[in-house]
Length: 387
Image (cartoon, rainbow, N blue to C red; front, side, top):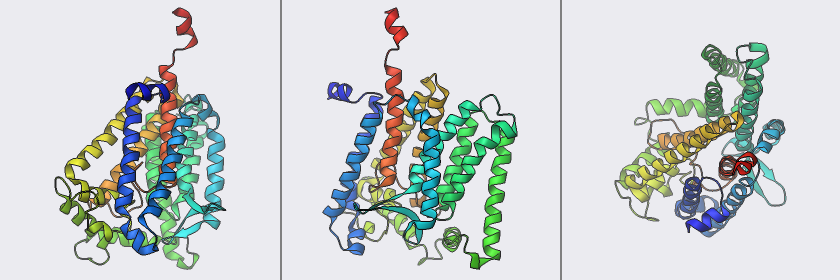
């Protein structure tokens, strides 16, 4: 088995094994966690399973195709990816398909599937930011020449995502600041940038509150209610039904879980297969399996950071750090929401939640990491000549 993997799947073997395990697990869990979707939309579990299998296949093909690409091309397309992401977000801003009160989705004609443009925009921003950090590495003490060119794409992407997806916008901003910290941007400038971001957020909310007819933030009441309800969760039973059911599901799972397919509360969690994935997982697989799942994500982060630190190319180091932190942050937020630590957000579990743009872009991210790992494991021309 190991020889087969090493023959066809180059790069970091541990990352391949973890990714394939998670994708395989997603097939089992998606089939088990979709009863609520079947009730709401009237289709069959096999319909959603087949749809998810298609996304898994696309995701795996993305990893395989990208891991055979020279990493230098990722830097070369970073600028184009960023501008394309901006154009896509602007299109979504005006013409996005609305689902659950949020216009985050773009519908693809003919094939009839949708995807979140923000999923692509996050990776595009990390690529472009990594490229800029390399180009501006000697100018990071200068606001005009070094810091502002780095800050501008962050503000643009976050602003375009902000209207319909507050949690993703805040997550992207925080991760971008973390990448700048890794890129050795001075702390004083990072603090200033963070303060400016907070002031912009407060200003937009103030304008929306002062002029509600402008409807700058159509989901503002939803965000406010989620934060307010989080403070008094136990009193607001009806408003916090999702969060309370998630906690009950985790409690019901105990140490070993109720068994695959035997969970009950997953039938009442609207996003049991996505936003509340972790709660559904603990209910059926138990705390021990949930701990092992968290441990797999930690190993994945360690291997990605290891690849980044071993690279002699700064762009590769920065993009590895950005991708690793992003995947772990998504998984952590899903866990913290389900356990009641964070208010309800829209972050799902990478590689595990029911397929779509998030799953495909997570696989694309791993493809980039594996391409860098392949480069590191391939002898250079100089090494070959020395031998």
